[in-house]
Image (cartoon, rainbow, N blue to C red; front, side):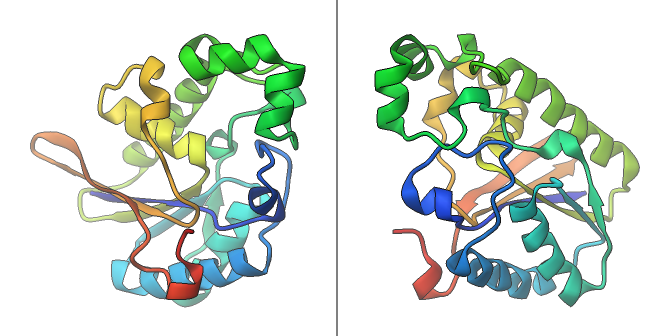
Length: 207
């Protein structure tokens, strides 16, 4: 079984450096171009199933892939981004000045933080892994599954796969519109590649 995890492309909030959780912000023009690049690459992946978070920015990527592969998109709300609560739409500087204790704990001990009015990394870890296990159960060894999700959600899945404690969450970085690949063989799940943007055209590469 092959699993390909795709992060959505750029939105205006990404461009402006605003925190973006479950607020339903669509892709901007560059993000849509990145989605088309991803769809072109997906043809060579030969996927047999396509899953997505139901938020607009992920669904736009999934729909581009669906156009070129003929697959239908299955949505799973457990693939949504971390619910940031009151942190939705704020900048890092605003978080530091308005929620200094949350900011400091998030930097040093992210596993202990519950976003005010939102979720904790523990909750994110639990629901994304449930989604991962549901996909695994639904498909066979010859399948290639593409999942379109979000920064923290994909990092949570990868961290769980690697046995990484949530205290080390910030040691992982994930670019917009990146591709992460896994497969399952006799030794179980393996991380084959992480945070690849080689499928993007030069103008759509991360800066």
